Each structure stands twice: as C-alpha cells, then as structure tokens.
Amino acid sequence: MSVVYRRLDQVEVVELDGETLVLNPETFAVTKLNEVGGWVWRTMDDCATFEQLEQRMTETFDADRRRMSADLTLFLNEMIGIGLIKIAKDTE
Image (cartoon, rainbow, N blue to C red; front, side):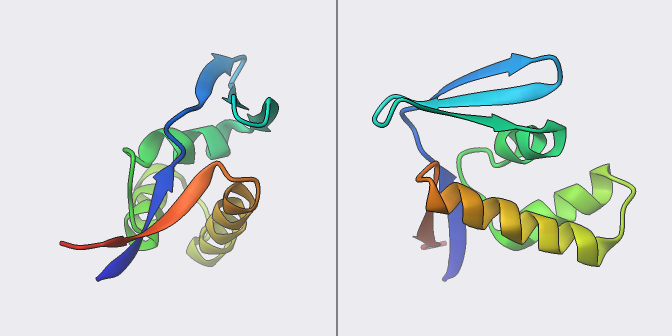
C-alpha cells in the first residue's frame, strides 16, 4: 500500500487570472493558489501518490527535480495543514 493524497470533496474552486481560489465551505476560508499550486490541485485527479505528482511535474515544467520535489512536499504539507488535502492509503 502507498500513501495517496485526496482533495477535500466539499470545496468550491474558481480560476481567476492564472490563480486558483479554493473555498472551504466548512470553515469559510479562501485559499489562493499560484499557477503551479493550481496545476497540482487540478492534476491530483481526486487522488495521487507523491511519485505520480512529481513525475507529472517533471514532464510539465522545466525546473530542477530536487527543487520541484521540495516545493511539492511543502505545498502538500501546507494543504494538509489547512485541511484541503487528506492522506489516505491506496489499497490497490
């Protein structure tokens, strides 16, 4: 089993001028994601492993893989901290 990341289902998402706004209706908090954060959010496809997200980022963006990995870790941890992403076990 591997760890997968799941987006919170009950959110409202709006794209505006290259930024993604995520509203959590449970807390009424609005989180603004930059272009890359919005891309990660959309790419998660409701669940994804870190490795899958990292691979997709590497294929999409021309940047240092170690830096992308560190940024992805930071992003996921921040989203977990504010309750927009949950960690689950993949049973496949």
